[in-house]
Length: 389
Length: 241
Figure 1 (cartoon, rainbow over the protein chains, first blue to last red):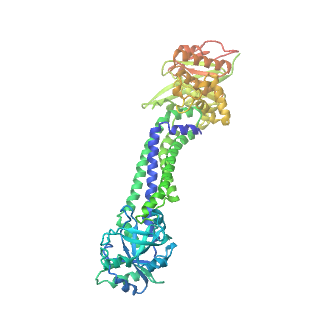
Figure 2: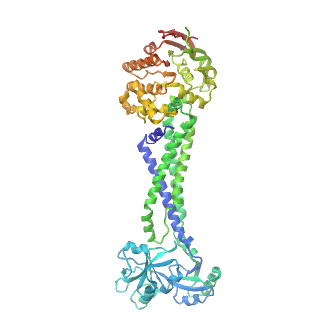
Figure 3: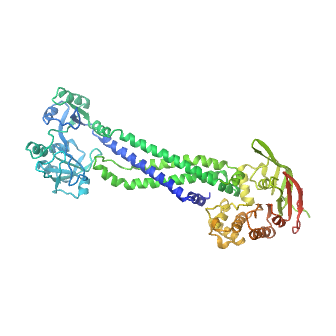
């Protein structure tokens, strides 16, 4: 097998080969990236606890519920405990320094979310001081915060009445043990927010965004959801209770059909690149006709002719695929850090995704090389030698 | 003294279909070429010279008759066997040189050796030797584009003889060359015939090239017209019908 000829043929037209290679690189990179993105969008849903329910306003997630609902909800059979949770929507120094912050019942947080493990500081300190908070490991690393630091936050939804910043003391740093909780969130006392609103120290809507319910052992989720919803059937504010996974799914749905769209884009890109590669290989096979004739005249077989064209196609696509995967893996870390700010904790170019990208590239190579390779194998020597392209 | 025939054609026929019509290119052709012979095939365009050369070289198959080369009936061989036979027995020299443009002179000459069991080092040595034989040892790292036409054809001759074939088939080897380069190529072929005992069959329109052969076979309309002996082959030569 004249391998050298195969390699030399591959870059006989360097500009064309590099352009085709570049397009395969981009396609494979996009496929890996988009698949990882879809995975990140769906990971929260998959990792959600089946033992947690979310109670929100039946009108909209953006309409708050009365805090007084908590006692009534906890009285519902099957409910073990509940926790208030309120989106704060602030930022540190600049709006670009975005990360999630939630006001919660501090003493109930670790019971509601056993996936949160305090690795520095202590939960007791967090529960003891109303202005304290706990932050994720990644968030601490990103901003260089440690236990004892005070974080000044600008309240976008809840500005301070005097225009000053909110100050949260770091009482602990946590590690997320599951994909439905990310490492870039700040949890603070709901009570701190509530009191500030009541005393006029801060401005903004009162009430609670959602209640997180923890089911009692053996409780039937469907029955509990129905009972909670029925409890407020006649107001003053109707509620909608869902499982946490359903709640997460609603978030993904709020992004429209983004996962489907992303998958469609990936498929479209792949199809376009496949056509471009087919075209390149057809041009290459036409150019190789005379060379194939020479090789056959020298005694090389149909099999060699087939292998040369197929090898060229597979090599081009395989190389493009490998580079595309390498680029996707290289940006995996930075993109994950960026997406965590928006709550997508599970962005990862997994080995299966890398294998898929490479596999698709090789499949395109196989399909694009098939017709030219068969054509080369079938070429009659005399006709090939006569061909002047 | 008669010399063993290395090429024997008996009642060879070849017909092509062109635009829905059958064109008989070779018609009941008989021909023998002795081992170590140097034969020029001449005739007007369309007389069947190149077709005959392709049949002798196993590049094409006859529709009828027998094409026996060195005891092998090529009409009975399948495509794979024919390819193996070509690799072992024939060296081709074409009018347009037919070198691989992406490979160097050395790599072009090494190409047929990939079909042998030689090691990489042996292949390199054989190719260097062949290039030295055609006087191009110092051009081995040049690509075809960096060589003159005459040099390209000498590289092609080196490629043709590197496997030490019994037969060298040349199709208008001087057709694309200037007078001096053509002279050098003909001299080389003559040397290969005389000193290495290679049997050479050459298609040509050029009377000067034909003059270098020991006999000239004239074809017309696919039939053998006549055979012209030019100079004796030592120790003996005969081309018979």
